[in-house]
Image (cartoon, rainbow, N blue to C red; front, side):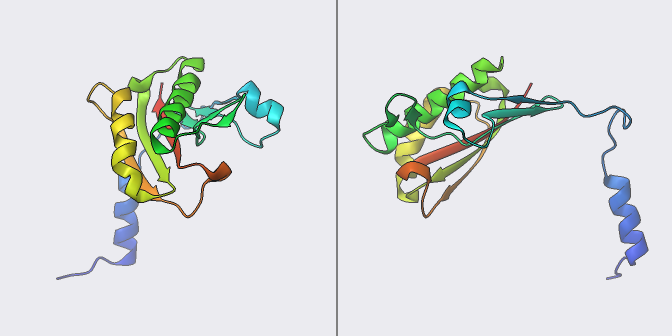
Length: 151
């Protein structure tokens, strides 16, 4: 087996890189901030859009008036998904725009119960998804979900 020279490998990698349609066009970045986050002084936006890609911050199963919803993984997942839906809708998007979600679970053993709720938000066509167990989530939450959507 012949090995590629470093120069040949770099040439191959360079040839495979994608080129933007108009490299001189500036990237448009818009920030969207939920009033509750802004008023609470959190140092992040609920969503940031760059060139039609909308990156949503991680959401927990909280309500502004009561904090983390009680009842464990099921109710927290439902509230988390409702919070994501509200952010999507506030930015003129829906679940059909979501292309990727990352799920953080305080206990990976709760994955089946999480899935029972998660799948009810989609029509059978799901975004790509990763799920992992975490050693702790903000506010003692059982689940946190972040998503990427495409306008």
